[in-house]
Image (cartoon, rainbow, N blue to C red; front, side, top):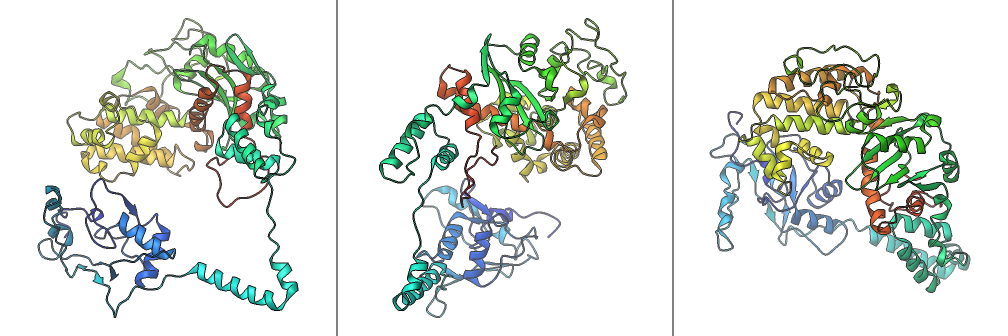
Length: 559
């Protein structure tokens, strides 16, 4: 069986019923479905097994999952069989391999096509249908047990009046102002929608008498007083006071300043080291361009010299902060005099002359640096994006691997795929795909495995003990594959000692999420990007009530 693979992969079939799962149909991993495994064991009397074997399916179809979980919850559902398909290791591909003998292509002919024949083999025993001797099992009725307890308590109530008073103490809870504010934050409601919700609940006598309906109109005022608009920039003029108003102590060593810009706006956000607290915006502008003078105005407005946070951003922003010339320059690294145009020496030479001074007009230094180079942090997310970009650009455009990426992301333009422009979730999706590495050549596979190892063992929350070896292997395999030595690859190759111990705690990914959050507020305020918008955003990050709920909001961190 190890000489060649099966005609069809085992994961293309359902583990429970054994039927073929269409390419576009939903299928669920058994490893990530604990409720499904519990229902399987309760219905068939056996646990889910052989998930560590390659010859067994690891997924279930949507019908089996919904039927088993519905039966497990006590719904009126049942499987068509009392015994599922039993999987055993096949001995040969010709007569005892279920995945080679089933032909799913028959269903491609339309509705009138002949049905797929699923054989009964020693390696795959067919399901046994229900009959009078093998009826549908009774589900574990948790609700019936609760009803039995309630009925027994009602019997006690009839005989003992004091017991009736003790158990029937279920008074309704009327939310106060803090509770309704937290509910509006969790739902992400605007001021008008929050006021509408409060009004309806108040009309139905479901709120405490202290709740004010019009309180949502001025919810931003408490925090907007710490912001000022001047010369097209809305910024915080009292950072320490803003932290006191939130209720936490401001320690500049525990925060890092994230500066970035998009096609819409220039933003400065404080990110907590360790990501315990949410992002705190300090400046926002839709008029300032992404250039050196704009960044200088922003730092002066925030009084950066007083706080001296560590600063993180993409490499274009880091160039502005260090006064370097933009574009494809000869010496783009602010730590050393790495020659980006000496392509012959890139993968042969690691030690380059260090920068000892930033002299304007020399070595691509165009302006005076805006901060100390020791305060600059490397962006792990942008490093990952850059490594992925160089890997994809080095692929042959006619190779199966490149065509697989085009088919894997059908909504992504051909120009972006060819340029290797992917975002973080897309890269994660490719890393989890088991088919993509099979399309690569031996050299490309070695480079891809090195990339995955560096992302998981260095650029995340957990640093492997051999991270130095992982990075060196990555650079070596990238060189063999023919990847261009970009600035991001050079940073990993020559300045590995400059990185923090936990890259996930100092990542800029939380700041990139802020871009998505602030877009909603920009849509709400429709051009009035002023102090009120910043105060309203910060108000949405607060938690006032200490009540615990069974179902939490999607926002995982609050002040």
